[in-house]
Image 1 (cartoon, rainbow, N blue to C red):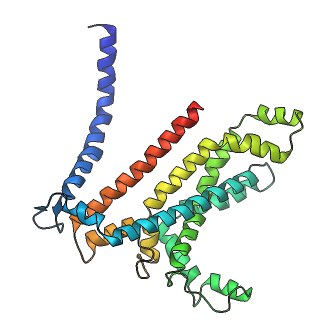
Image 2: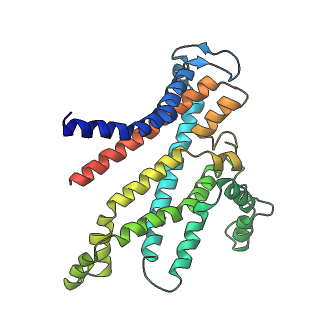
Length: 293
């Protein structure tokens, strides 16, 4: 056996445990999920094979499109809010002034809290009877009477977007800080020799160097927006009048709610997988193009 052949077999042997785990915990469950989506099944009785009927029904399902629209609005609001706010905070907290560690910790703290605890906390804050938000707004004269933030179709989704931004901005701030601190100092030194102002250094050095980190933050935020479930389930359960119903809450209701249709719920999950796969593909293509540039 030649040395090259021995190295090849050694590489296969080293990869085998990882491939086995990938097969058992990823590929087989994924294939089984697709198999379930081809059946009508309540989760307990016998599965009835119906082919692609669930997928045909999904394409005609108005509630599915409404949930997808809410996911898109949620993604638009949270991605823009979190990335812009996190970048601004990271730029402000990049210095070495006194108390900077305290402020970084304060902004990052919500990221390590349970979303269930956060949901209950913000339910109290939004409560029109004893909530802090309405009390402050009334005292400041911004509103005259308390607002049902989670009880109105016009404000419920926006209120949830705000909570998501509040929780994850600190996490994205840390990523931006890591990116800012990895920029080579000699770039700033050369700019200072040329007489560049602080704004010129920001727009011509800092922001261009953060393109990859910004893209990473956008993709992570977008994927999180399409995977959102717990905060909506805890705070509104998709209401009022389905105004905050997203794909995962709709899938949950179809699978475990009154419909109890595991096959159709799995079909929604499969559609969500394809959406996230498309986002990941776009991210990889943009990253590849950025590296070539």
